[in-house]
Image (cartoon, rainbow, N blue to C red):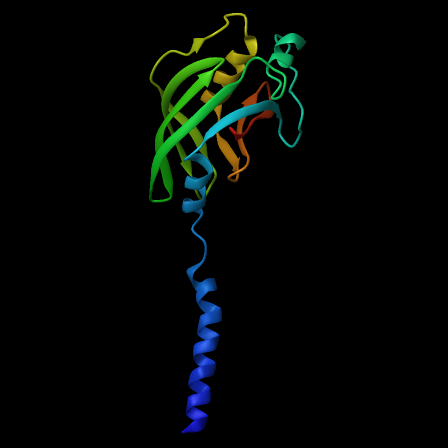
Length: 172
């Protein structure tokens, strides 16, 4: 009888160690945490795997400086809302700051695909000479994938045969 009790206790102990591995991690829950519940502030647009401004030929140095996260006078922010069904999160977004527009979006929690599925209103630019704001809208409209966590969000898009990335951090 004592031997059976020891086996039973050992079995229970092993099960408590194995249960977390069997339950796994739900990536969809993680992707919902990545996108929703915060406002994202753009830090820069860069080439994939780089960490400095991509130099668009039609954007002046003064415009880049105006978007400096610390000393700049311009910013672009985006907030996502949405819900998840079958590993796909869908919802609405609202962009504000240097360019204002709203629309719908979706992301696949398994494949990391991302896309803007519709723009509800024409983008409104605070400064018609802000060529970088136009690249922000173009990048969002052409975004095909994302990476990130609750502290960083990267939206990838193709531009002139290069993969570019719009980098965001949560607004503080």
